Length: 255
Image (cartoon, rainbow, N blue to C red; front, side, top):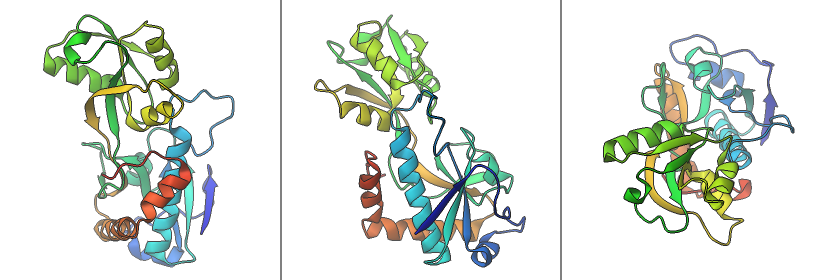
């Protein structure tokens, strides 16, 4: 498998036809919108599972390119930051490695290939959501908007809490361990990665929001979407998706 990564365009952008599948087959390259593959070394990562997610997504993209376009096909990555689906809607990329989020404009999502989401975690004496009334909950940036998910959840439950934003999951966990906050709304995969290095595992109180990993394609790219779903089903059936996750160190859960 040949996989290339590039921030600048080094291949022609997708042809603005009704469905890009025909031009894709002729080109032999799948242009993939993905969040930063290799951020600057000095940049503090807010996502504790960033490295594992990107390695897993890159491997899935390469496998998709070969399944859809043939064994000599390659995936070319466009590092697009947080907004990965925008370049697909604007025809600057064929597909995006994303989390399925309702209401994304101009795109539709494939069947999920891995579970993901936002969870509420706690330590110590907190065992119920009601124990958090009047206390401070840490929220984190990253692939998922944990603050938005936490606000919606606590409002629905009628539990009053304070939300405090942290630069990432790891500093939020440090505050939790120090007793400065009572719980954290954070990325599910990130929590699993952090727990690998802990003797006292962080406990999940409740799932706040589902954010399964999926492939975004343009809403009018129906033939391409069908091929993506067909390829994902084959990769899942062969066990290759789980193997790619294990190789990337990604805490895989079936969708």
